[in-house]
Length: 136
Image 1 (spheres, one colour):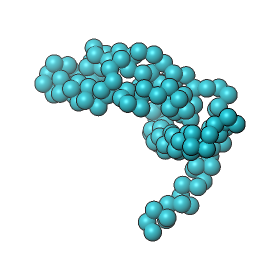
Image 2 (cartoon, rainbow, N blue to C red; image 1 turned 30 degrees about the horizontal axis):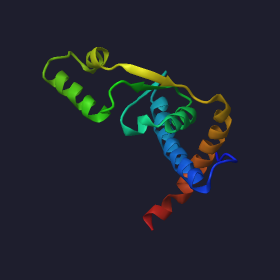
Image 3 (cartoon, rainbow, N blue to C red; image 1 turned 30 degrees about the vertical axis):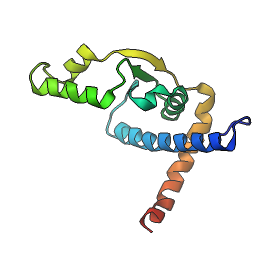
């Protein structure tokens, strides 16, 4: 979704971000097919520092994203799982409730939703057609 004032290099960067977001939307759709209905997503780590990336992702997923107070998402999650394994916490739900704090929430951009919905539909049509190119 290139804006008129974006340079070509920024437009390409944004297109890459949108493509990754569409791939994550595919994963979310699989979860929804299994009956999972998330009300929000949680984000952490380096990518979560980019407001633009989170606005794009929240809009493509049409889901609010909660940025956690701790940046080290994977390492922090591994430590929480270690706490569960060691018996510090009963289960992952207790570990998350005790240790994970939300810093702020990034809402989907309402004006971007229609364009991203159309983009996602194009992505879904093109992905299977282009897949044989990966194998070549």
